[in-house]
Image (cartoon, rainbow, N blue to C red; front, side, top):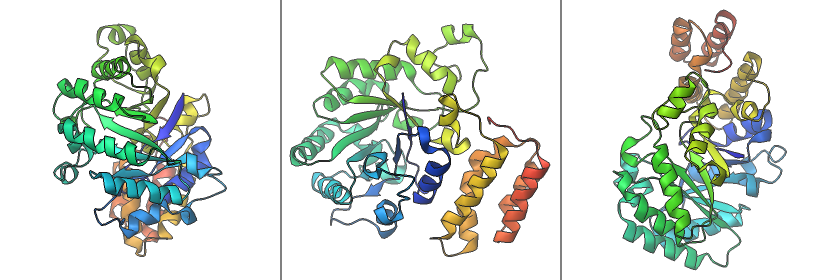
Length: 353
């Protein structure tokens, strides 16, 4: 099984990718960038383009970055997407990923991301233009989608559209747009989507996405059997549930987002390696601070960026409320460092949160 680090806007930027790859990335096959918006006048925002520039890649950690890092493109126009794909190809990337999954209202209201799932006729024409214009290029096109915009009833039309094109890889987030990231993944619907896709000639590799977490194994065998759809979906149970639905053997990769932010050593553990240690997490956070400080000019803004990570990490510490409060209140590097040292020295560490 391959494992991918999912794109998360504003978080999985190049400092995190470089540092995670050095410390924990031996078992991670691909890192996806947060989306780059392909604007109609053929330009990227400066900060988005900077995140994809090879000069910001740790080339010792990423010895084949063209295959190990995948730029994700946000677009709803054939011409803009084709331009963006060629730009990324010129930078040495061998794959780009079309974002059809982002549920944010600012995105969907612009008929982008998962907003395109509500109009399969337009989506079909969009994909037709992409593959017609990039058929001779040396860059692969992968898609990241959801099961629909409002309802699972949209699955059949969507999968029939995807099956028409030579997609390199199809990542399916097992929710509809209206779910956002709430509730349990719709595993029955995911299995049905995969079946429809294959029955209609779809040949792409399949990547599963949705709720691969760390707190595993806390339910009984009867729960597995009787409530495949709704029982807690975690890293140890997801394979059991998908196997029970007879679709696991057709999945070649798993994409993990929040699970890897909560536990940067998760993929190592899934591959039989050791669990995350307190010393590793502390070093990881120190390196992240240094990495963000290199391109964020103000100290307090670096801290705000690290606080985004702490929303995923607080479960690693017992009885930590007052220590977390101190971290959140810090406004200088000194205050932040002291607060972090306090939580590590004063609170029991939990490997899996």
